[in-house]
Length: 111
Ligand code: 5GP
Ligand code: ZN
Image (cartoon, rainbow, N blue to C red; front, side):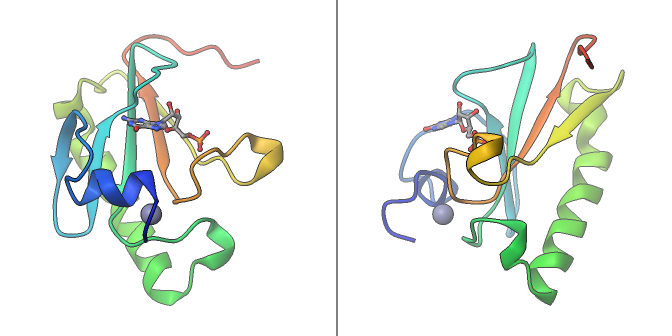
């Protein structure tokens, strides 16, 4: 989608520190990390929220979660990590292209 920063990163039109990519997702470092390791898993397909997840997008998200699980040790996350998907205004979603935050590399507060 035009003027979407994550579509542009996925297409390589905006530089990012990619740590993984395949035909359906890219994983790159968050520009403002909120943990020692803070990655973003972004589907190449543009849609903004889970409310827009039809059958194919749901299957894509399931594959993305399984992939994160398999890749975690290679991403420095063998000791554990947290996944966050901000949805809408109250959650502070700023980029309206669905993405999964991957946080880890250190013990994470949970309060
Ligand atoms: P949200 O608040 O929408 O869930 O998260 C968006 C995230 O994208 C934020 O953590 C922000 O730091 C990150 N971000 C925004 N623009 C860019 C960018 O151009 N490059 C990278 N690597 N991360 C970005
Ligand atoms: Zn997009």
